Amino acid sequence: MSAVDKVDLDILARLQCDGRLTNARLAADLSISETPCWRRLKRLEEEGYIEGYQANLDRRKLGFGVMAFVQLTCTAHDEATTREFEAIIAHSENVLACHNTTGAADFLLQVVARDLDDYSRFVERVLRKLPGVSAICSNISLRELKASNRLPLL
Image 1 (tube, rainbow, N blue to C red):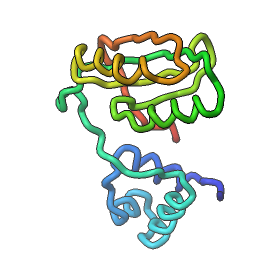
Image 2 (image 1 turned 90 degrees about the vertical axis):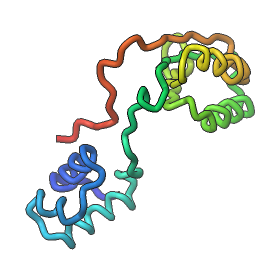
Image 3 (image 1 turned 60 degrees about the vertical axis):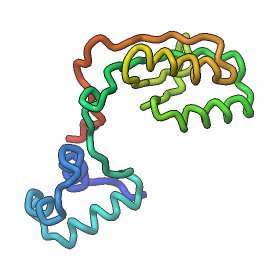
């Protein structure tokens, strides 16, 4: 993997703000010609700096009114249990993010649900059936002050 320079960081920062920027517009904004801009963009994609492109959706407008942060504590850490746990989490569409953490809990999940009843069903049908999990602690978000995936590049 090659190192990124100031122009690469500028490309990444602009694409974080608007993933629909055309190469022509990006090149013009950076004051470089289109071909070198396109090459840089392709290199950033190929080297994994850019993992993909997606639209940012408003979860509330789409009916997902509940955001929960869930701490999971595990008693079993063997390879088979871990593999099964990870497969279930990876295929659960309600789980937006899962982090293996330090501290009192082993995992921290970010979960969405349509309402509290939907979240309760998710806990019963998915979380309580996870292998090796001994404790579940849910924190429901009352108000979202900030949500972003944008990295502070510049």
